[in-house]
Image (cartoon, rainbow, N blue to C red; front, side, top):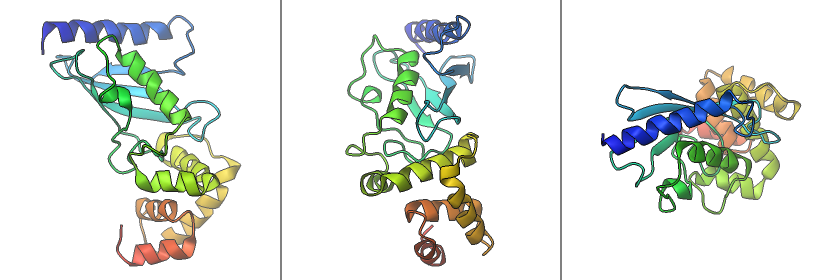
Length: 207
């Protein structure tokens, strides 16, 4: 990796971690950790923003730094599964303009982490990464919120909330039929928590 990229990443790492020790709460507890000694790979961690279905969850990110950084953006994806129109529920790929054509060399990893938290708080379903989630968001916002809350509990460690108690009950009902938690969760989430449609999907081998 070019010296410029290494120097920038080391400085940005200190910027993110240094802010945590100064009582700065605007990041909602963002974190960074190096995966290797060459500074090309990092682990990111962000808290789900307050007053969203993701609140209380902790979301892990995989961050790869190209040799041409900061003139090209880092490659970022969610490791923690999340139900969000602009993030793939399967691969964790992200649809965010600053990670593509709107990147500027003055931006930093802190910018990226805060922008991802902002994206979690304000989804853009008309420019989706995950069409299934976006369709649910546009057609049944309550089902979307309930699904996102349940995924936050299952995958991101968020506390249980009354709104998604029904999800747990329906999930247990289908798991008792011999399907795995992941299969059941995908089916129910995709079908808006309609048990009959989810059963058809499961037995149809579409997962």
